[in-house]
Amino acid sequence: MTYSQTDDAFSLGGRVFRSRLLVGTGKYSTFAIMKEALEKSDAEIVTVAVRRINLNRSTESLLDYIDTGRFTLLPNTAGCYTAEEAIRTAYLAREAGLSNWVKLEVIGDEKTLFPDTEALLAATKTLVKEGFVVLPYTNDDPIMARKLQDAGAAAVMPLGAPIGSGMGIQNPANIRIILETVSVPVIVDAGVGTASDASVAMELGCDAVLMNTGIAGAKDPAAMAEAMKMAVQAGRIAFRAGRIPKKLYASASSPLQGVSQ
Image 1 (cartoon, rainbow, N blue to C red):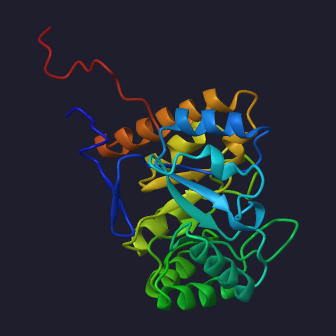
Image 2 (cartoon, one colour):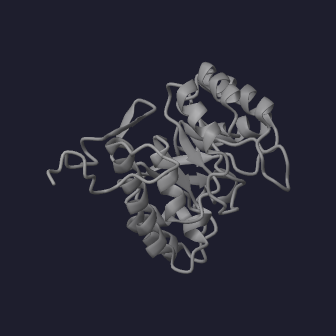
Image 3 (cartoon, rainbow, N blue to C red):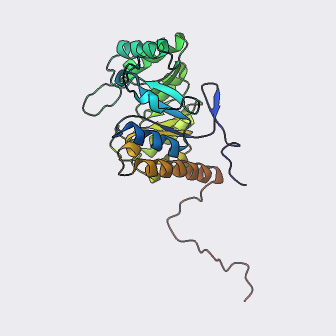
């Protein structure tokens, strides 16, 4: 079987995407570097922090560097610490014409940036009722993932590790359980530091990976974006191919059984 991104389409929120890599737009040293990285990533969905961009476009904005004919904008509620604040930010994004999609973040702790899952669930319920396509950033808790799905979330986005930590997936067992628990897409969000981290997420069976710092913070963001693109593709191919089971002892590559002496 020859792998084709087109044949292995990614369905999200009623739309179909070819790329399973979602990328952020924060932390780049210049907008020009951000633009180059986005192009190298071959992503189709890019996140933008509503509270950190100039929506009236009176001065230079990162939105000036994003080709909206090529990329689907996914506004996010980064920096929100209450459900009410996140809901208000989502409304602002929609009214500004960005999108009725929202990557929903409700942060519960300033130091760790872990989500406030109680407030996150409440905000998800409200925004779904108001017609938003909600993609909530949550912890790696299978129970909360199921609750968010039941609340109408279009996907669940469990963290692999704390935001910006670059530590990779710290609890693969929980990610596996989440994959068994929900039927909506599972997108690992936060903690990816390098290409192998992205591959691990995809090899576990996740539908996609979202990252920002791992690319924006690299010495060469454009090169890292390209590496992440290939890592996501490789991990997906490996998952579909089916890995061999792990064994405690060796198994000969060239067995002698059936070979005449």
